[in-house]
Each structure stands twice: as C-alpha cells, then as structure tokens.
Length: 504
Ligand code: UDP
Image (cartoon, rainbow, N blue to C red; front, side):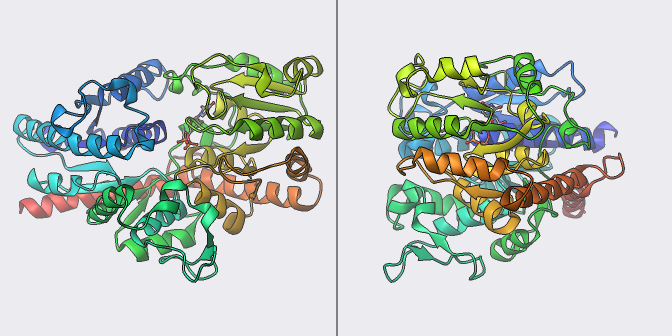
C-alpha cells in the first residue's frame, strides 16, 4: 500500500533455536501476506544466526527482507558481566541468566520501539513477543501499541506449561498423578512428566518467582498467536481459550511452504539451519535413504539441545541393532561430555559403528542432520523423537508416526497429546534418568515399524490423517488459503481495525 498506510511489526523471540526459527517463519509469513515491515529484535549472537539463515535462503523462493535489530545481551547493571556472549543460548538451565537477560532486554527493546515511533511518526502496529517476556505488555502500552504473545508450541503443550507454572503445587494426597486446571478430568498428569525445575517448584523457588509473573503478565496481552492449526487439536484449543480468556489465533504449524504441499520432497530447507554444523550432506542422506524400502527406516534425533545419558545411549544402540531395522541416528556426546568435543566410540557397543557401516543397517550422523529432508523421504517410517514441537509438526506434516522420548520444556505434553489425543505415538521413556533396556527399544521399534497390522498400522493411518489436516491448514485445492492462512489474515485485520478505532 502507500507509505501512509505502511505498517511495522516488531518481534522479540526467546533466545533459543526452537523459538527463533518459528518467529522467523512467522515474520516471513506476515511479510508475504501483508508487505508490512517486520523487525526481529534479539541479542547479538542470535541476530548473527538469523542473519546467516536469512542470507542463505535469499536466492530461494522464500527470500525476504526481514529487518534485524541487535539488543545488548545483559547490561552490567544486572549483575552479569557484559559480553557473556558464549552463554547467550545456554541460559535456559540457569535461572539467574534467564532472569537477568529478560530484564536487561526491557529497556533496549523499549528504546528500539521509541526510535521507530519517532522515525515513522507512529508506533509499530503491534509487537509480537515470547510468553517469557511478560513485561512487553507494559512496554507496548508505553509507546502506544499492543502486545501479542506468540507461543511457539502447540495449544495442548502451551496450556499444560502455563497451567503447571500458575497452579503450584500439583501433587495432592501424595499421589503421583494429578489433574490440572484447564484440562478435563480424563487428562491425568504424572510427576514424571514434570521436568526437574517444575518438580522442585513450590511457588517460592527462583524459577517460580521469575516465571509466574512473566506468564501471568503475558496473559494480559491483547491476543495470542499459537503455532498450530484448528484441525489437529481442536479440543485443546478450546481449553486454551477458556483458560487464558484470550483470543487465540492458530497460524501454524509454521513449516517451510513446500513441505506442506501434497507431494513434498523436492525442495531443500537444509540451508535454513546454516548456523549449525551439519554432520552429513543432504545428497548423502538421500542416497542412503533411497537404498531402503518405503516406510522402513527409523529416524532418531533429540532436537537442537538435548542429549541422553551414556547408559541410555548404550541401551538405545543395542535395541536398534537387535531390531535389525535400518536407521539414521543424529548422535551427540552423552550427558557429562563436552557437547562440542570429539566423538568417542566407547559411547557405543564395541564395533557398532563399523558394523552399521558394513551392513548398511544404519547411518550415524554427528551433531546435526537435514531433518525435514529425512522425514519427507518415503523410506522414513518412524521418528524416535524428544517431541519438541517443531519436530512433532515436521514429523506429522509428513505422516510419520512417532516413538516418544520427551526430555524437557513442554515435550512431555506434546508426547501426551500425540499418544492420548492423536494416537500417532507410543512413548518409549521420559527424561535422562530412566533405565531403559535394549529389549524395550527393540520391541517398540518393531511395533511401530510393522505397518501391516496392529498398532503400527493404526498409528500410520492416524498420522496420515493428521498430515492431511496440516496440509489443509495451508493449502486448499492448490491455493494458499488454508485455515491457518485465513487466521493470519484475520489476525492482521483485527490489529489494523484496532489501530483505526484508536485513532478515531
Ligand atoms: N533439527 C535439524 N537437525 C538436527 C536436529 C534438529 O534440522 O539434527 C531441527 C529440527 O528440524 C527442528 C529443530 O531443529 O526444526 C528442533 O526444534 P524442536 O522444537 O523439535 O526441538 P528443540 O530443539 O527446540 O528442543
């Protein structure tokens, strides 16, 4: 439109890979649908990562011109040394660092918004921020705009996460099971589904003292955007809307366009993750997958930050080998070892690597693999996953059933959603402390990869249905007018309408 009508949206994702990527995808989608200017603000290391990601796909069809704004990471008046750059992305384990960085982003972010307002003669039409930055509601108000909170997870996982933190303590009558406000009684939760911070939380610990006000403040946002679609978790969306009392727009799942089309497989988004060091080329991966029968290969990965214990790694290797099923395993040093250090063969059963290479049973990929390329290949039949929301959506968008091994964040609830509501997954185990035996691993792999009968067949059929639903959220008879595309357009109209009313 004309420059007078031109609008600007500013975003602030949490500093973690699993948040940056959906925010960037949302930024691109908004820009494509509206032509608005979109700025993503973040700390220097993450801006560098986003910049490299954007520039590597600048010659693809998803080219965009997203603006990036650098905010200083931790100013010295928050008790942390300046330029603690190397810790920028590790803070999720450290409450002090999370707290300090969240607080220290507040005033630079506000300055950014004030600067835009001065330059353009009006404030951004809205800001879109992560649920961890509750203070953004007040910052938005102070510059005359509104805050929209974007939960990069799905509806079920988001509701569980929010409700768990806001309703402490959970266990009553010394039972290991409990019900959770916001969920119907049939959804029983179990203590082993609480990651360690939540298990220790009583409302007075430092995690609760930080998260509770951030989350409840975030729920005072104007609206909520959720990285899911109406079709795949309609009930959970209703529960989320009832619980938060917010308008929730389903604008996801935000996956690369081409992968949501009917026949995926030909485009490469691998370069999107240029910030990570790949352990294998796309071509090599595809070539290996081509050797195997349709639906026969197990893909194993625990996302961008998690790893398992060394005893678990040993059991996993034994079980996979005994199943005799072909597999691709993205392998990282186990807990307690330098994550950037050299790979050691003693983490695996003796001679494992050589045997897998010789027999062609398995491909071990160190560190980072082209996940979407693998999941969209016809040979891939199951995904042993930590159930991060991006992995979950990537797998289901390709109709690939899941073997769940949730580790942290809201992964246990994504797993619960897939097992109990969708029927597309079985859970192998939870967390890094569980004792699993090779035999259990072997059995679950056999169950899920047997697509001719029983549970395996049922899961495959259900995953196929979800694949169709996800595709319908984007496309309708080849046109980009699926439900989530419509919701995004409606969301944009709602904020424009609000601005118009306000200026009358
Ligand atoms: N990913 C990848 N290669 C890997 C591991 C992860 O491309 O070897 C990508 C994966 O496709 C997904 C993201 O990293 O998009 C992981 O996000 P998710 O929400 O599943 O988990 P998180 O990393 O946030 O725990």
